[in-house]
Image (spheres, rainbow, N blue to C red):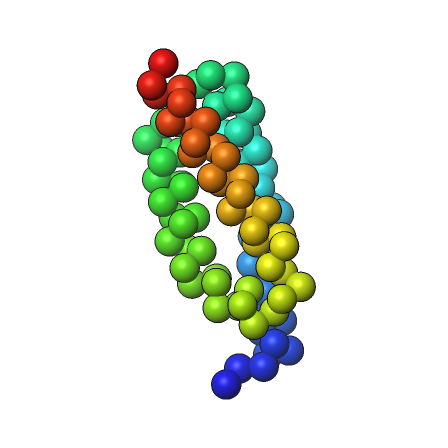
Length: 91
């Protein structure tokens, strides 16, 4: 069984990727959907990758509870964006 301390390198990389790559892009997407825009095909592909990665990241979050709140907030943000984008599509 993997100990949480052994996960430190992987988690560090995941946090860095989130802060530098994913968060800026997702905040830009949120601004656009909040202004009534629709998601592009590239946005949808990005979200698909994020949700696929979430399946693999879950085991690290489960073993390291201090990251559960951050992971939940990130997934909530992704959910908010997809829900708002769906509303925009219906208009």
